[in-house]
Image (cartoon, rainbow, N blue to C red; front, side, top):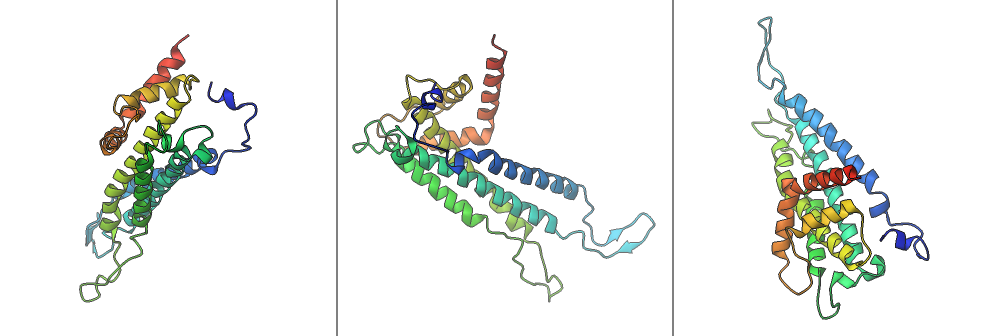
Length: 249
């Protein structure tokens, strides 16, 4: 019903890239992560000893211990995480900006001007996005010679991988905030209804965070949504709901 209400008389010609190009951006990131998974599978099953003891009895000094494949894979993952968060943050910004949201109140507040709504949630998402942008700078290009220049070019793979833990937490926060804003925005379109699958998604969100209809500290809601995103339960729950809807006559 919401979509159909925009079929006539809508001044927009096209959606911004953060909506229209979401499949292309997220798809490219997923392709990157699949490539990373393939690389890590190879490296996890590789012989990284030095020297290598070969089947014919030869003992060979080599460099299989060098973690450059893992370092590059981690850097690629960091870029993908940063990009997913970046495009999600733009969608959040659209939802809270009345000049872009077409009919939604400023900051998705019940009483704009007197109440701040989800303003600080959007600011938080921007901060998390900026943090991930900084953390996505490649680590594999950094190397300091040690051991009397014997170890003169190292991968920095541990540094490259370790920051992914923080980046993933930040991304979960951004996506959790997007879920909060999306649910609030759809509810403001009442009595027009969204699709059954999205109604199911909103019910899942509301099981963890109540509508933001009055001033309150938003951090517990963000933490609850971040936990939900990291658990993967939200995706499983929505997929099960979509399957149930599709099976309904």
